[in-house]
Image (tube, rainbow, N blue to C red; front, side):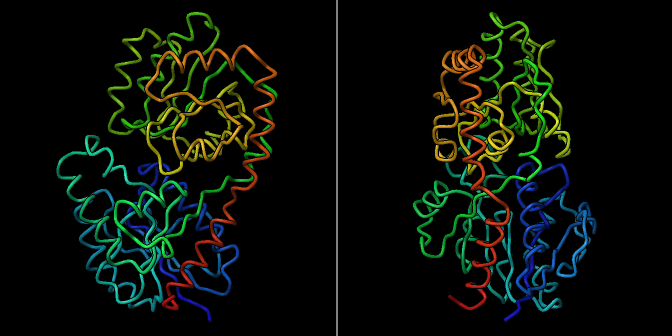
Length: 368
């Protein structure tokens, strides 16, 4: 039976929410490409507007007019205005891809909780923000017919912390855009690439220190930190100056997908040093692009990469520098890892994520 599926995109500020934007945009495109006869209603904020970049008969954009930049107003509207908008649209089930959900909705909620950073690393949050995160995520676990997340590691974590039943908690790993597999890497440079929002848990200050040590022998190398300037950006910039590598490090800020792909096409290696992640999409992007990869020896990154990347303890600066040197020193190692990675990355597709999501929404709508 065809469903009217709501998608709660009130949180999505273009260029302002990092990987959760990439996830929703690609997931939505894959869902409307094969909607199974369902109709999808995308509820957007003022900043997002109507432009999703494509048209589909299966997709209707509903502009709510609320500002996504004001978190209190957005959350208030989500709890009060969104249920009414969903009722008007005749929504049968609501997908909430950004941690929070409308508790007063009379139809089933399916909520995606990407990770539990607020639980494991409260030191990275402002006091009032932390209170809001704890309340709203807890409420989502209580008011959602089903939960989703982005990795098996996060699925196990959510179950352990909130006691949410595993049989109603589904992982849908992100995919990779097909363009990554066709990148032409003919003009590879001595470039270290890190695609990451500048947040504390991304471990970028350690990466800067390790790069400075690595560059003592490898002066030809430069590094690019590509991603949204998060609330830790100033600290990262200070560390670049303190380490004396200002002339060798570029901080780009938010880039278009084309801009990110252009960097992957040039980079000799990619580093993803995060201490905590729900999944870590830049990991599979680098794998699909055939860029030799170094990442932290923590879940879920090591689950994703298997034997296709070099791992290092995320608290060990010298180990990271040594791992970068190992990759720089051997073209054979780089080529072997890149070939393995491209093959392994092929299992991660947005079509697969969309199919899992639609299955979950259908089960929630049926009361299963």
